[in-house]
Image 1 (cartoon, rainbow, N blue to C red):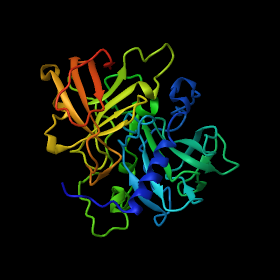
Image 2: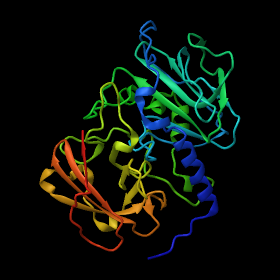
Image 3: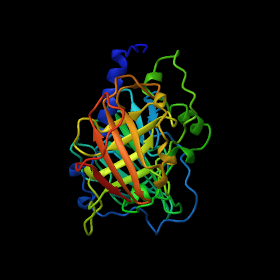
Image 4: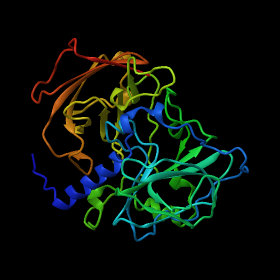
Length: 356
């Protein structure tokens, strides 16, 4: 196998990206404790949302992580918002569209906050990990291009869009409303801003590296990957749900794809185990999760650390083996062995069961 050199620069970029993603993890991972707040304001007029201004000045936005990123355990499920990665901290943050402040989240563990702004009676957007202007309050009107904050104590700004008019097609609807109504924020930008922002959707190895060509065609990304009758998408450990609650990240599992390289299989698991962000390489000829059905029987996936990749391909050695079997369209059995040499295994009493 050819050795791949990973520069210290890419390692630093990966660390900052991980900090950015982990900053979005729920404290305690139990959504039931999050204050119930307005997601839409029915008193706002109907209409079509358009983003006419950048959230960060163009020279300050390093790159964009599109919809569908995973970073278990806090984002075992593909993310319903994008990330605007900044080159430095303490940057001005602007409202991308005019609207009404309908919710302000209390300061996070990082000292920053999130704001939700209603634009129409069915559409709103939110920005997270920002330091809000001190006089900003619920009920205020903001105008497109108005500075409403500065960047927070992480390396990115969260940017999400909610659209009450869409159906995302999740098999299990026990998800936060930001996910149920999640939409593609970049697609609502006017031109030429939309094209400009799509050009920033790129993996970390492409930053400041003219020799690296990224041409996978990913623009908005994809976070809804549930496919009825297959393995693809989001799963919850049996017994995860209690009355009035959503779930804890530790009880989740997702069969998905790399956010930049959709042909690369990714598996994210919330359990407290040695590796949670897992990759499967194409050389092993794995069955795509979207093609796995009840008739497929027991499937074996050879596992690699998805945090160590280059151009979507794992660069390290194999770390384990996963067995998975669809018992029904809504129930699966899973077990991971930290075995780097065996080609096959059998389920034991330590296996886990997931449903959706």
